[in-house]
Image (cartoon, rainbow, N blue to C red; front, side, top):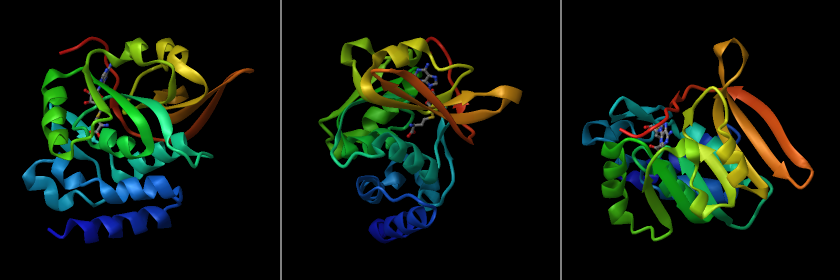
Length: 213
Ligand code: SAH
């Protein structure tokens, strides 16, 4: 597959959908998404669709990854500092994050996927990605404070630990349930004056679960 050409076409579609941050577009154009899914699905890797990654979990569609990464990069032209990702899955979004931040801490609660992500990421030699096995609902205090926190799984509420571990000036983006059982993207900005919540569009993410398995 001439994957660079298909990725460039994907990036043009993302731009047409409103993604404009240069570093985000560059990261989406650089990371080979087809290497994170089963060979049988590689042909669909650059379509705007979520794909199964095993253990009943899915890799988010490219437009959702780009949207969330753009939200944490908004208004910044430099690389982010430390970023925490909840839900490593196959490791794709962690690879995208490694292009826009100095350090990525990513946590997965399913051992099978944690190991799969390690294998998927190995050939890319991304020395700034730290793969952690554990319950991401607790965040990862050792790496705090974070310039940004991004969750790939949605629960009833945003865990308090995440907001605590966010730096002042930092931004958290996560799917969370809102009224009427809907799931929406929620942005939390932490400032010296307090914490500001913004509810954005409806999304469909796998559930955030506690404990490990
Ligand atoms: N960013 C991932 C998307 C994976 S889907 C990718 O690029 O592939 C979301 C993942 O969140 C699933 O693998 C699921 O097991 C994980 N997850 C759900 N609850 C979690 C928790 N409390 N801690 C860590 N990971 C969790």
